[in-house]
Image 1 (cartoon, rainbow, N blue to C red):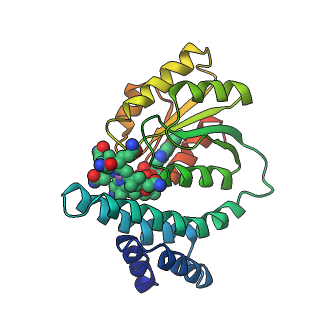
Image 2 (tube, rainbow, N blue to C red):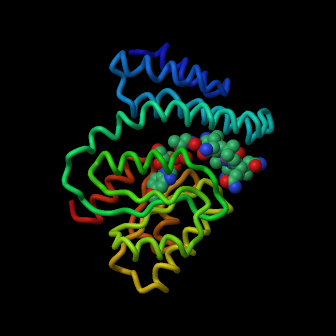
Image 3 (tube, helix red, strand yellow):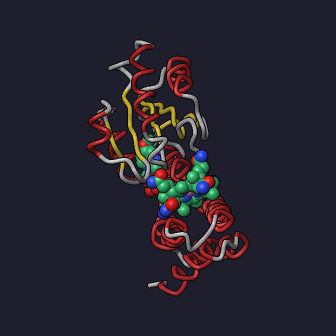
Length: 215
Ligand code: B1M
């Protein structure tokens, strides 16, 4: 169902066309397509296409940038809809979340943030390129239950280990739990660096967070 629309969403990302991406997101909502389906089955395949072709040297940095802009424009329409589910819920826990230092990929991290909020967590989103120590200082300031660290580059995922070590130095472990994720991150890596949870995607990140707060 809605295959043509989903494939047009994918194409709008490949074309790097934010206006078209927004128009299709609005049409999807009108037709009753679940926002997460539009993201995962419509737009993300477009990003994967651009990412693959960029990796092979067949698309270039401006293509990556425009694909990212188109994706941000689409999620700007869809994320408020995802968010609505979280309104008027009991707070399950508080999460400090960010993309680690040296890494400016924000789309997946923001989706995780939205899904956590929609599921009842209070999320303090620190943004991207977040210094290792900032996760710990912020977690202490607001009494966070969980710190979530996103990384999209093989060169920056090592920074997740620095965040774990920083929380230990600040005496926040084991009370404050740590979840890691991002495209190159695996469960084995999460275990190796001493994280408590791992999310392959935003839905799995929510499941991991709920398990860690005992819900
Ligand atoms: Co970049 N990039 N990028 N990029 N980019 C990748 C990641 C890459 C795989 C593309 C490729 O070469 N095939 C490659 C990394 C290679 C590697 O290290 N293995 C790459 C590269 C090389 C680069 C640059 C170095 C390029 C350059 O400058 N030469 C540069 C690095 C900049 C930096 O960070 N210092 C760069 C820059 C960019 C843009 C800024 C242009 C843009 C980002 C725009 C933005 O975020 N505002 C961009 C984009 C768009 C991509 C791709 C195409 C798409 C990423 C994305 O948004 N995916 C990406 C290739 C790809 O992924 N197919 C690529 C959609 C998003 C929903 O998925 O982010 O995986 P994702 O998040 C998922 C899960 O991973 C998980 O849940 C999310 C939702 O389901 N998840 C978590 C994420 N965080 C989590 C945290 C959790 C739990 C789950 O717990 C806390």
